[in-house]
Length: 77
Image 1 (cartoon, one colour):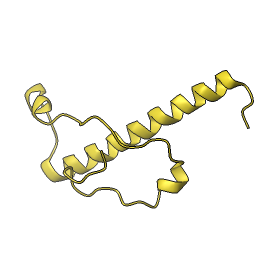
Image 2: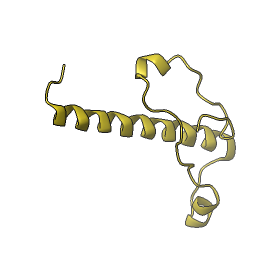
Image 3: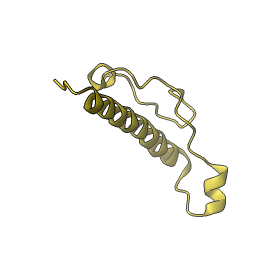
Image 4: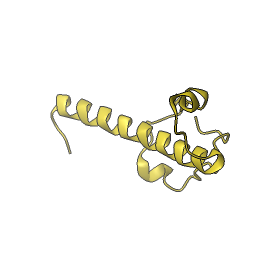
């Protein structure tokens, strides 16, 4: 257990960032499977990664059994 409030706050921010990044990577993997890779800046602008708006407060162990979207249009954002 982390007792120092400063360390706990930093740890929580790191956890939140990692959860957001994992969700972004899951989305990218599915979008690439569906539409292929982006190889130019022009394509990149046409297919941006959406901003994550879901909850990142839940423990990872609570969410690991939830299905990962199989298409880039599936909702989890």
